[in-house]
Length: 452
Ligand code: SF4
Image (cartoon, rainbow, N blue to C red; front, side, top):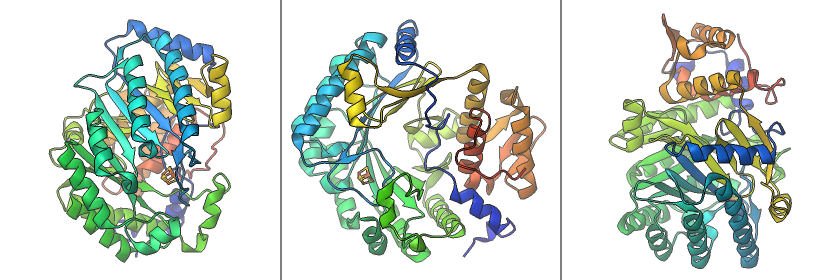
């Protein structure tokens, strides 16, 4: 049932908001732009040598999983061939050589994040080798925020101890849903007991932060089932929870055709699921952070939001700034000195570029001054839930259009800024996507609704 908070919003508008929005917000959206060449990317990296005080983060993508979940939206390959993963590490070493040649070997990292795919699908020796690679090209120190995404089913006590010994402090576990009917429909089955045990083992091993990832909008998901999942998650008491919207795009991800579209919640039902998550977590001592994250009171993200230091990049919300995000591995998305780059999404093309000694980027976009203003405005909106008029210079049309959402109670128009209202926050992802797309690219590839 649609929560009271949204009753007077036209259902047709809710439908259009939810139908077309991608799961993650990237600016500019990841489409083939070809506006930045590989050699220009190299120059951008070299330019950072003189900016040695600016924090640089590193994202490494591990594109391997033992099985394919039906809802998956990630760039990953199913393999059971350890040699294939060893070869991938060989190629990652080449890519890190190229990056370190530009950036300067031994550049300190503010953040290191391993994502995938399933990073903890790697064997112990492969994980050790991967961290050796990182440490031989970059510098990790006590202040580096280190995190890794893990599949709980593969996170043994021995592996967690190894990951901690290798320097990882934050663990991110993909839970998605605990309702068995949903788990069967998405091909990802694990019990809440397993999650509880993995979290307890991780804490005993010394992990400083545990994030559980949930997804709403999945097949067979119901308010009753999701309520039980939320209760179990609260009982496990993670430090953070991320709650992603499922994006059903089988034409782009053919494995999603195995999901019966008739089993998916309607957009209004999805909104009700998000509402349920927000109510449950905020009633249980968590703060709602930005668009899709919850953090326990006292967590560094919660503190960062209170003190307005919250930052958002390709690896999500962070409590300390990442001015530049260098990305390595197939399909990884980076942001360096005002340029966005994405690596080749196919292993073959990525490897071929590296064999030829080229940066393996498939597209890149150097932000213009106008892009940069839009980028800063959107980040501010996503982190601080407001848009000061001073940040919208040159974006007057967008500012005015956003302000018109006040008619629906989604925005509040003040004398010098727009503020996102409590109910506008539920639509912030859609609003940001709309404005990320509207000027930087001539066509609105997602057809995101415009009501004003
Ligand atoms: S574990 Fe994650 S990356 Fe791998 S198939 Fe499942 S959803 Fe995709």
